[in-house]
Image 1 (cartoon, rainbow, N blue to C red):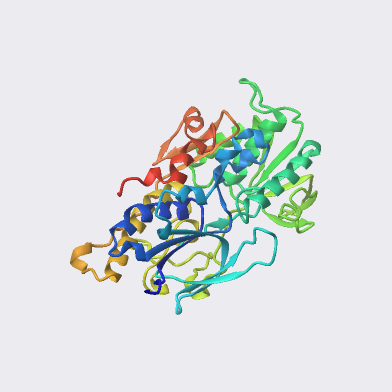
Image 2: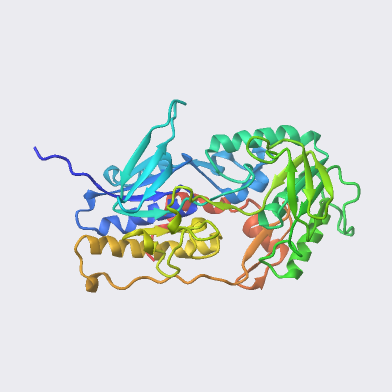
Length: 421
């Protein structure tokens, strides 16, 4: 009786937008076209066993009643039962070390029973790194597991009814959306003929180092956003930077509901019953060799092929963790078919196909047009798409009504990638 052969591992790190989409695409369009397709296994590794519609966090953090929870959080393993069992494996765990010479990834397995975490070392044939980025506030995404996110939400919600002052640092979309949602929920909205809500129940302030909020949008759009914020009792402090927060853990996972003293670079200090840091994200690359990482913490990635050229053959990076483009969902989606086409080509070449049989590389080109959509409460918003300014009602229709939750069903199930592009 012949010994079972070890499958060639196509390893995908990260179980969010980029990782799930890549897994579906390769299982649908790459593995079935390979010689001896049964000898390949795609292994998806995620720190969370659930996938989250992350853009919805600014509203979802307020209450579980804001969204249907079974749509907001979706279990990952059932999404892949549609594929042959020998071609797919899911691992609930976190990558801790990448060895590009041995072509292995060490994975700390999540213990479902609460016992000691085991480590598995996996040898890969191909590797796609889509581990995303972590947010400074534990309220804004799956930095760890869905359980830890829900725990942070519960602690925040318990403190919310007694809060009189809320400080949000950061004038990007996450900070502005959070301010708008909290302002409308706690303070209501000023009438049509009133430019500013007088005597808001809770004083909410956005602090930004920039000369305008929402720096990816033109100043006139940012100024409209500031007017919408004023209508829900939110003030904006521009050209101001937070230099320290006491206690240091305020706003973090261990102090998400802590009162804080916030010191600004102008020498002023402000007291906050709740402090929410929304100052960008940090790429999840702690496991990646330093020589593969650029100054901002992302993985140095070929901007056209999406390969990590210095990591050896058949290694790729995608999404927030990649240096190939600025991190945004509208940039990520066009990149997925291109990355997957190049993975497929490389797998065919490794299986013995000739260059003339597999064609040329697909080439990625980043869309750098003014594109960003920012709801401000449940009925207002600002934004632009492909350089065109969008009216407030369109912001609501596209994103503001449910923060993209209407799009995730087809995405998580793989239906969005049914056709090979």
